[in-house]
Image 1 (tube, one colour):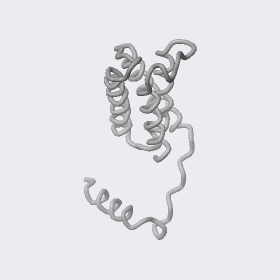
Image 2 (cartoon, helix red, strand yellow):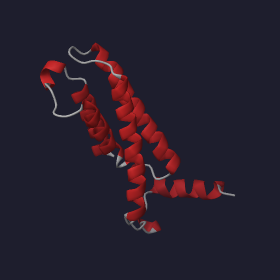
Image 3 (spheres, helix red, strand yellow):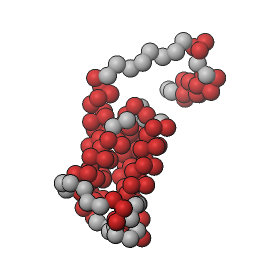
Image 4 (cartoon, one colour):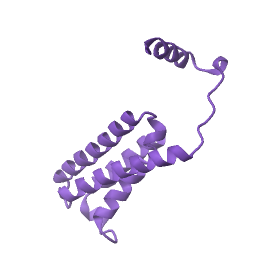
Length: 133
C-alpha cells in the first residue's frame, strides 16, 4: 500500500511540474497518460479484494487524474486537456480489469492460523461472521 501511495505522489509531482522543467516526451502524451494510470491501477485487485472496492478504487484513480489535469491549469507551460482525462480513465479502468485477470491466475497467500492473527483482524472476522444471514 505504501508503494502504491508513493506512486500516486510521484505521478502528481511529475504531472504538476512546470512545462519548462520536463521538456517533451517521445511519442503521444496520451499513451504516457494511459500507461502510467494503467500501472497505478495494476495493484488495485490485490489491495482491494472485492470487485466493488476495486471498481471504486479505479474510479477514484480516474478522478485523481482529472483533478491533476485541472491543477495543470495553474502550472506554467502545462494545459488542461479532455483527451488526457480520457486517457487517464482508460488506463485506470484498463489496469483494474487487467488486475482482475492477474488476480485469478496468481495464487493467494495462505491465511495465518487464528493464533497468529492480529487482534483487530480477529474482531473484524467476528463482526463479519455475525452479519451474514
